[in-house]
Length: 65
Image 1 (tube, rainbow, N blue to C red):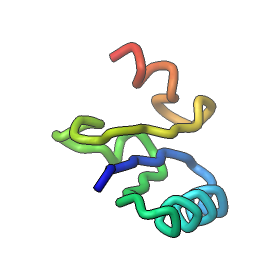
Image 2: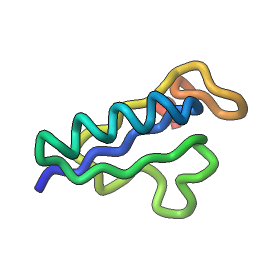
Image 3: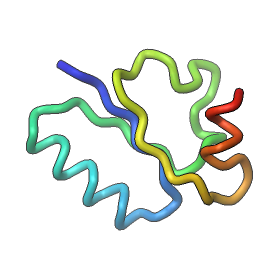
């Protein structure tokens, strides 16, 4: 099963995107900030969907790192 990580600071967007993707048969994890990734970071996912404008570290910064 394909694993997808969604990072967004909007709980409504997280819930809606997760619902659609789970219904399509994907395993989905969500985070509301980049800081919530922890030690593993964003590794081990087949696709990462993220907001680029978030408080703290944003999507552009995560992509660069």
